[in-house]
Length: 480
Image 1 (cartoon, rainbow, N blue to C red):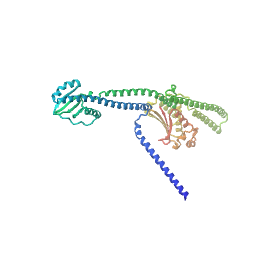
Image 2: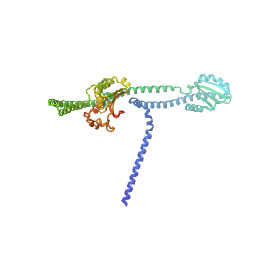
Image 3: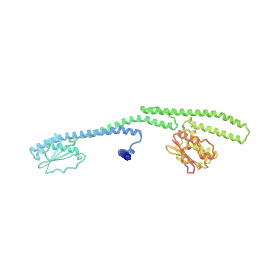
Image 4: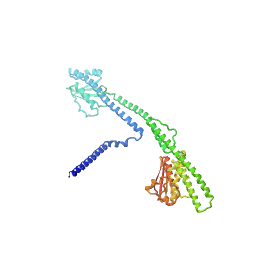
């Protein structure tokens, strides 16, 4: 019983630990989701290119830091200058009031007016029986108004009212006296800092200088990466880039050298494979030729005819093996008229007696007049698939369409087709599916493999699908 109880407690403890781990994972997942939420919302708005992203990463913090420092300095400077200026004006007003209090009559204000206008550069007049206006609501200049209020309150004991928001270049100050209101018009520059535009110009100019330096620097850094990407894309399409040289930062140079080394190794591998199979083909042609001559000297018979057919099939298979190994790699890339190539392939097919419907869309005629391809390799790629379609189907349709980025050659037939789960298997070398085996059609199972190899050497691919005619649809898509 003790052992059972002990096992039950261990099981409950393990269950509690598992639930605790699950709860911890849920909490962490929720925290990550909450943390990434605002960034996920901003992601569609951010640039996708390397140059604008790098520029954003470098310029944004610098500009924000500069903006923050400028605002803080501007605010402190503005407040300090306003406090000192308003303190000086408050002292002058306090002196004026002390002179008025010695003889509190309107004539005193009139007598002091020329002195105040000349020495204090302020205009004054007395409004008998006047009252102070109601205080204005708070606004943007509350901080500066508070500084002026503080300085006037420290030196003026009478009630006062002032207005810094008037459209004129003066600050209206009104002081309540016994028999009316004393009006004082002081220049805005006497009480407020008016050089704010200097900070704005400084911030804008410095930001533009930083932006220009960042653009010039980043453009030189990103240019080698773009050249590397274009070279890699050209290598993937089987095109040579003779002027490509490693450049840029150390990491970019290392990647460029690795790309060049990889291309050289692949080229050596393809050349060695081609030379080996070319030698095998040459060595096998000699005994095959002797056998053909020996059969020619024998009396005709059904067995002799069968042997001749076997020899022809062996030679055909040998040529297919060599073509698969070579991949038409020795042919150079040159601008070619794809529309003329398709029309030529269609005409040859009709001369062989095949039934073919050819559709060339208008966009293709306008876009495919000079596409850099290996013409013989592309011709073989299309012809292999077309031959398969005409072998297994009675009705075949050849369609050429194009966009600004790629063109597509579709070949459809009404034959038995291939099950969807065997599409990739059909591209394997030396693989013939049940339909080909039952039909007794000649071939070694290399047609689709050679075609895909040639399509991929151009940077494209071949995809299989169900045809609207009932059979198989093979689509060759290549970049322009």
